[in-house]
Length: 157
Image 1 (cartoon, rainbow, N blue to C red):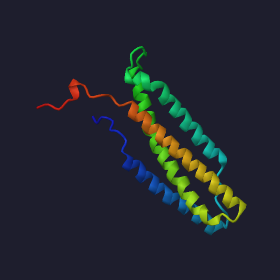
Image 2: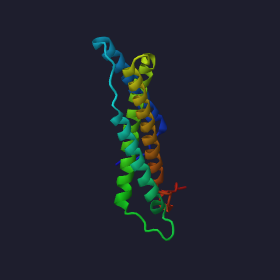
Image 3: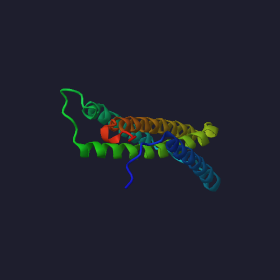
Image 4: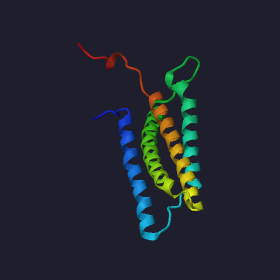
């Protein structure tokens, strides 16, 4: 049975790069086939910012409980495990959204002369930055959920 491994930044960067190429390709294909630009709703950016804020707030609340600070009630082990799983999932989804919306923003950068291109550029840029905030909050939560090495975890001689 494998234990959960910490998220590697290299994995998140790889996901973001692949999805950036996908986002750029979607804009290019839609523009070539239909002659229209991909609409990017502002609601996507708002949702990413709300989720990032909620995750950061949760991390801020549970961090002292996870660290076992004196005078603070410790967190239940199952809640800590679920928080770590949430952080891992959020970091991967955030990297996916970051890459996709960054790719869309790069593709829209050449189409700023139209009102729809300008709107899509700014909404996709705002969504990409919100996804970056989500990844940051998720990595912070995951780092907070790490257990310190105990006597059982020390290498044996």
